[in-house]
Image (cartoon, rainbow, N blue to C red; front, side, top):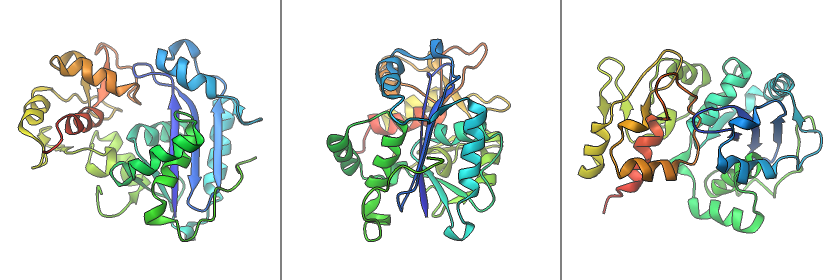
Amino acid sequence: MRYFLDTEFTAFDACQLISVAIVSQDGNEFYGECSDFERPLCSDFVRETVLPQLGQFAGRSMPSAQLRSELQAWLEAVPVAAEPVLSFDFSGDFELVCHLLGASLPHGWKAENIETQLDTTRRAAYFDQHGGEHHALHDARANRYAMEDEHARSTIAGVAALKGIIRKPEQAVSTDDMREAVAQHIKGEWMGGLPGFMDEASRDQLLPDDLLPEARVQLQSVPVKVREGLSSYVRLTDIPQPWRDRFRTALRGSGCPAIDGEGECAYEGDWSDWLQRAFPRG
């Protein structure tokens, strides 16, 4: 069974978790907000769009230590027999949850990036009807709705009430394997929705055959950085104009933490994914 994950966080260059939501195919939900994130770190976009939507669910704002305990308990209560798969459309969401928990997910859980599997038309239709975009719970519900055709329409009879204590390869991978990949800086197709991935031996960018020449040249010209404890990333100052400004505008935030001495950075997956969208195959 899929469990759709979404998070909100403070900013691209100084990332702290603000909220986390998980919505299962059968309507069970977890939602919590951190009460101790540093508001001065929030980007203008987060201040204008994310913060005003907080506080909609009474009793769901708490210190991060309590949020960690409640989320851990909720995840552990999911039966292994359900074959739970934590499904997300942005690898930073998974990394933020692992950071919150301080470990991989409980035994029996797998994880999968579903970005390319989402029906974007259905996702947009959800927000047209319900609003709430960039609220973690609404975003997770929207992703669930966007996959109902494939995974759940025949078995789900509507959205359940809020509960809580209230390819990528062809299949999902274990969270231990994904966690190890994060630590080793490998951004495989199953890890971040990338059009390519890092070869650990050579650190060369492996590109898909269908990436247009313009995008290929731009991507290959941007050096991919690695640092212990981080996924691979790019420095925005290394991205040539006009693509740098266009990418920064489209990014609107990232799970990439602040990196000493590197200036503004973005996950390599976000950069390469944006390039593929910016140069669609004709």
